[in-house]
Image (tube, rainbow, N blue to C red):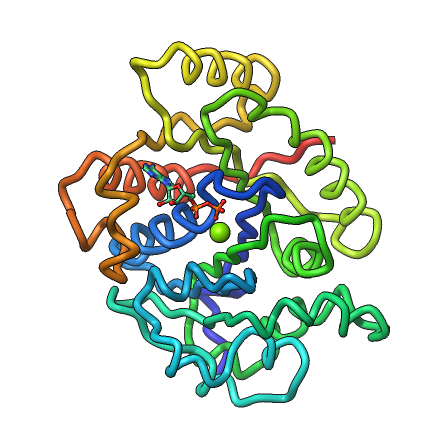
Length: 269
Ligand code: ADP
Ligand code: MG
């Protein structure tokens, strides 16, 4: 049965930045947990062969029998690939290093850029009654990231508050423009979030100033502070919202979730 209160299905957001170590996985896990805490049903799709989102959400290696690799390349039962996490309402499709070969295997597939789009829109997905799908992208603008962007309504970009932070953005924006031309004309920018922000550090202030001057309303008001509890949480296999619910990091991700829930995605030309 179609639920008429949810005519458009889940909102799908790709968390992307081709730089490694900028906070993509941390933001995916904790924004997803904060949305779930706010009562939403959320699915994280781990699209990075490193599988850090899967680990951070408590999925052991031996429980990753079916992964995003099978989701993309095989006909599988969604019930065997969508796993529960420690957070109620938050589910995950895990990844393993198998996914690293997908980028090459996909090249000869004529639907190569649309595999994730189609997988996430199969009717069996309705059974999960999702409100949000967050896709944790690899640190590259490869075919996996293109799949994520083709599948998504918007792209959320974590920007690490450090020198050269803005340098890679023009390449990322170019890829978003190409994706708009090649199959997802309505792709929007959900927003740019400053991560690992340290307000005692002049560099953080400078990056924020540059970002707000150049990107204006695209930049979320919320800044994610550098917070040791955020970096400790994955080794305890849980979001920081569970690991230390009152920490500055947890509070910041709740504020980010509030912004995502309230703002409409912004479109840039
Ligand atoms: P990416 O997915 O972009 O490669 P990660 O989310 O894995 O980046 O973050 C890179 C590293 O920085 C990780 O060790 C993570 O724990 C740490 N980190 C991310 N965000 C924060 C934060 N707000 N405070 C402290 N450490 C953080
Ligand atoms: Mg990552």
